Length: 146
Image (cartoon, rainbow, N blue to C red; front, side, top):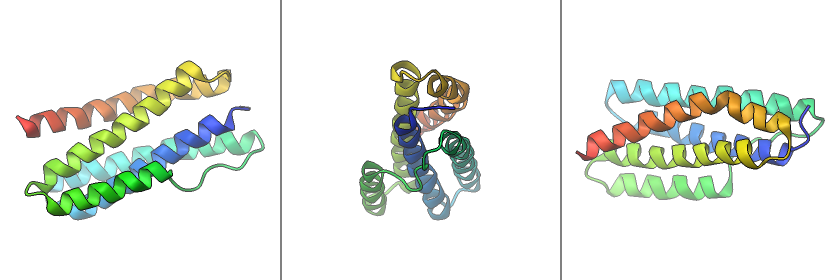
């Protein structure tokens, strides 16, 4: 199928980073509506990453299993920021919106810069979900800041 497995694996890693942090946030937040939202977002990331892993395996390569180093650093920073924050909901939302930025950029780069048509097609297929999640978190962040 796809020969640009490096790009697919980068996308998998950033999705894994987001999934892990959404799951963490869902356990730390008190509001039921945010718990449900964060759990849904984690499932979406997992579902897309699963499909990407299938594409990597189909091309004969080994799919990424974990997250990225940058994601681990971002998560550690977010955990510290949240512990120090007087508004944990806003801090989680702001940090999750930054994860959404990373995911959106990874998919945009795959769609526009990969020389592999299969990778571009996969990125394009999931772009509506990626944009939806990104816009939802951005909207929450803006509403909380207002």
